Amino acid sequence: MRVWYTAVLCVAFFAAGPVWSQERFSIFVGSNPESIDRMVAIAGLRDGDVVTDLGSGDGRIVISAVKSHPGVSGWGVDIDEKLVRESSAEAGKEGLSGRVRFFHQNAFDADLSQANVIFMWLWPELMYMLRTKILAEARPGTRVVTNMWDLGSWKPDATDDRPMPVHMWVVPAQVRGSWNWELTVGGVKRHYAAVLEQQFQQIEGVVRAGDRRGVFREMKLRGEDLSFALDITLDGSGMFRHTFNVKVRGDQMLGTVRIVPLKRDDEAGEAVTLPFQATRNPKSAYFAPTGLVKR
Ligand SMILES: C[S@@+](CC[C@H](N)C(=O)[O-])C[C@H]1O[C@@H](n2cnc3c(N)ncnc32)[C@H](O)[C@@H]1O
Image (tube, rainbow, N blue to C red):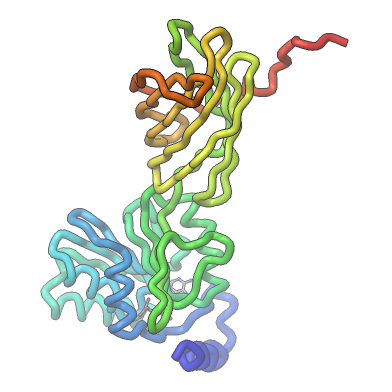
């Protein structure tokens, strides 16, 4: 089935003629109804969602998504003006003109801040190029759903493989960089300086508290929701387990941290949960000299 579909698209692609000059890599082949049902299902639509389809063809995905959920609205863009007219006419026939709009527009010019669910079924290279735009412009937490092809090294958060793959990604917040915060633990104000690395939704990080350094564990990022853990010795007070649950909003993290003293036999002491706020800062104390060894 997948081979058949790929063959149809290849024929359509090469039959399309010299279209290179207008940044158009896929001609119109409509997703089949069964794939659309699974794309809509994997998107997990909720009241208030605004869906878009980048390369909306005859409008079938946006129309199906909006029909499936009364609390959802949507819009589509296509580079083919005739298809845009047909899509608008179809939305009118379905009585959806108030909730659905179609625009004659290059997908690269679409305002992705105006949707929180993005559907795509375009030639793989075109989707790969749009990946860069999505990661730069879509709001964290936006779901991206594709038919058949994936987005390269950005691994999907969910896949429905049968009979043909549909994939779903959650756009991650940008958390790379140096983050600083203070916490009062064991009656002493502590300064923490963390450095986070990011590859799509995969996060790793290290931190310094006083002159001790540690590695974060169990880092999980989904949209703007970030959780991570840290066991570190704090000077004069022993080892503490930290469990952070935060929302990343621009250059701020806001949330809570649960702190438990760890005794030598691994027994835990009494836990406290504190409000947590961190700020991204271009300069990090993580790299500052400790001055412990002088040459
Ligand atoms: C394979 S069809 C998919 C149609 C629809 N999304 C679906 O799954 O039924 C790809 C569509 O993308 C449109 N398209 C190709 N390049 C585009 C671009 N750069 N910007 C907007 N639309 C584009 C084509 O005109 C075509 O309608």
